[in-house]
Image (tube, rainbow, N blue to C red; front, top):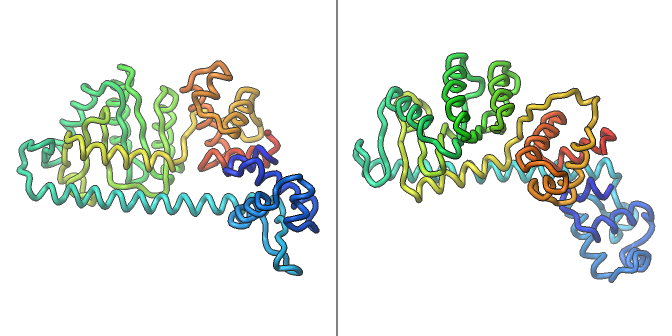
Length: 330
């Protein structure tokens, strides 16, 4: 039980108080404190947190007393709360995107079509394609992309695969965020598997800002008109603007669901290494520290965790831990 609820951010005292309230529902806060040999104030604080998390509720018979909810209901409440937080985070992301686009629009009114102070206007799809081809030749470390629009055409996927192959052959890592809807499109799904099988990463979210490409976190392409990418793009190298777009990408990346290359049936459970990794992550270890304890690389740890989440259909590590526990995998 502790390993599962620990993923939700409960501390040790809150978990102990919840367990005690579950086992002895007749006890009030002072009695729980005496039973647990903890200060009454500490128990009351823990109960307030649990009440906010909907892990305890007020007794119908005695409104001044708090009683623990059923563990299954508690888990559902925690998942619902996390979903609400994700929605709030996505709203923040949307607001950030609007701010960046307004900033670019304001800047565009005072910038000529030639390169000026780190901003260059690329008119038409051909000019954009030429810049993308240069990106595939010049990138040294990372290429990070928003891929809105849902399922991609066969031609677009073939072109992307050709460019990406050249980039990854030089050791460049590609990170792409698409829409959740692409998980039902076999062509785009095959492209995502192809990427992850070669060490790059692919994630999905419910909604995305307009298309964007970041190269080595020093240059960016964003559309002139988000509604019509054929009009062209703005090529940005000004550090302040690029830093804002990098921050936007990281906000979206953090709430996106990883796509794992390992897609074994759910009934297979977890391997010993997968189980050990999930337990370490549940205990609060980073990918790097968990990898060190398991004598694997951090990249392998990240890919393994992404694969577990994909198999479970989990949108977060917390949800993966809950689902794994419910299936008896932990």
